[in-house]
Image 1 (cartoon, rainbow, N blue to C red):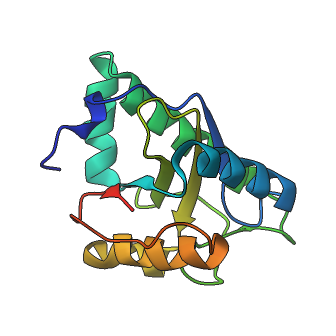
Image 2 (cartoon, rainbow, N blue to C red):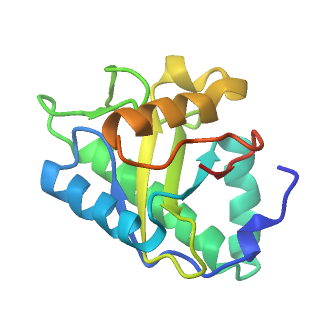
Length: 164
């Protein structure tokens, strides 16, 4: 992680979570909230072990955005673990179910690219898709576009996350 974007804006106040563990109405509500705030322009953060550690350190120093991102991941992990076997959360990239969370599980969080975002959509990568760190943002962009076809064109500006 080379940028200091975790301290640049207020934290989103509420998170929604992707995958089958989330109902269609919850998806629509979360997407609608972000769409209304940003017109489809997103900040996407990929959270793996390294980024998660940096977020923990920033949160310990009082960074509200880092705390909110970690809270979104924790809530998403809880939903994934509590999802019924017949309706597990799905990888944002492929149709593989994600039924358990490990130390290597990779998450993503999309928030409105606005000064004061009020919501977020969290998503998860399966082990196979999450293994290739270099392509995670591209995979996230494709997956988000599939689920959310009316977001603005996605341009990956740097591999540590950013606006999409």
